[in-house]
Image 1 (cartoon, rainbow, N blue to C red):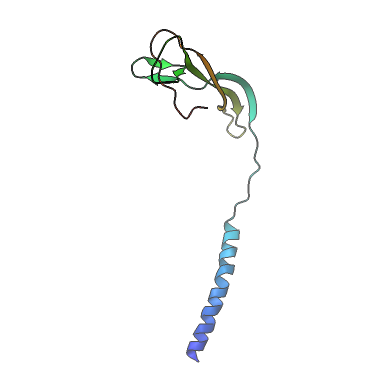
Image 2: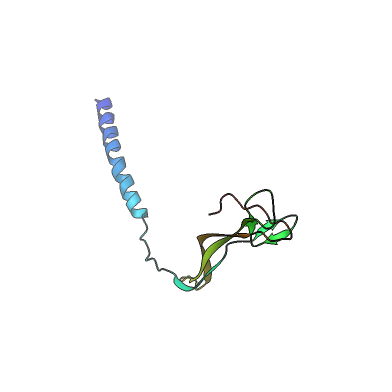
Length: 121
């Protein structure tokens, strides 16, 4: 008889745990705040990033192949659309970068630029 009473209690406990957890989860759920979109300022098209070479310094372009041959169509600018946005919560301006592609041009005479990264657009 005692064992039967314990079994009944444990069954009741197993059945009520999911209900208690559901109530606890509902109490913890936060109310979402309204999302205020940032205000768009100026936008322009610009070179994405400088490329660094230990031997020759910093460049705003790179070369496509390991062998550098001046006068060949093998140098690239990676181009982004850059927009300034105003964060309405903090009041601070920040910039976003959207890839626009790459421009190829004839490699100039002079110092050897770094090789382009393989992850570029």
